[in-house]
Length: 104
Image (cartoon, rainbow, N blue to C red; front, top):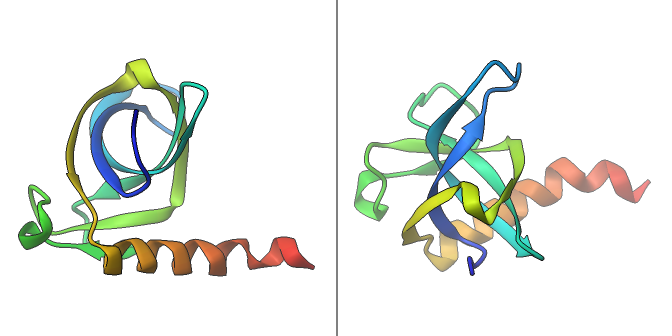
């Protein structure tokens, strides 16, 4: 079982469905064997929540809140580390801003 804020390694499909690659991702929630995640990139020019090597990332990275996936648990290789409470708050606040259009 995975918890919100777990940083995992998972097999993630390319947006154009041409293939897949093992990539880091942040668990947003897990339910009934499905894991909803936000992708992580080392491209620091991307928008999102910063994630540093000090926090456990392999390289300074960005949690991409606009790059969401639903994975089966079988696509997850392993859990790497857990986000700090402050970083989890930043993810929550960023997602709230992106989803605020649903309130209207």
